[in-house]
Image 1 (spheres, rainbow, N blue to C red):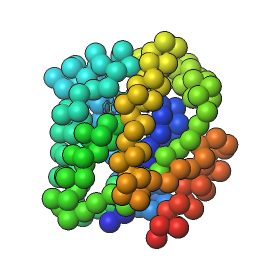
Image 2 (image 1 turned 45 degrees about the vertical axis):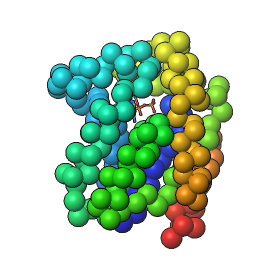
Image 3 (image 1 turned 90 degrees about the vertical axis):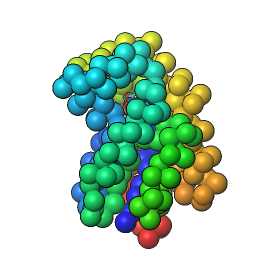
Length: 191
Ligand code: ADP
């Protein structure tokens, strides 16, 4: 299996690049953000609880997202690998992901982190907010809160994968195709 963590701050382009990666390498996309938005849409108890965190730009509690990913891993067997998008976002989540994969005789192969300047992130999210109905992209103060939380709680996950020699920084500025080439270069170098 090829298991990739696609990492980076909100607005880095993880969703867009995940779509391209899964096509190129025939992988399964697992986005905690997408799963949470589906739960909200369906108004499940999990969705209703998650919405209050998401609308404030806070992280949803670890056990909720860990449970979701655990279910997804059980559901999609016989796939050639996963792209984890928006997960893990804390060191606790990273540890739990390692443990869940280990139970299946698997592991993360590569963690690729998209690097984008702060101002560019805010611009992209404000623009996305104009085109989508994502509540967390509508307000600059919520956007700033998400980027702060990334810097305070999520960025440190890089150290977790660095220690395992799996961390690769990839330029997230430039065109979608340029960024994608950078990601593919990192995957090919790994292979
Ligand atoms: P973005 O990368 O633009 O912030 P996502 O779709 O990945 O968008 O996440 C949207 C929101 O969903 C986050 O701000 C957070 O509230 C919640 N969320 C998604 N993934 C996680 C996670 N792994 N842990 C905690 N909260 C999460």
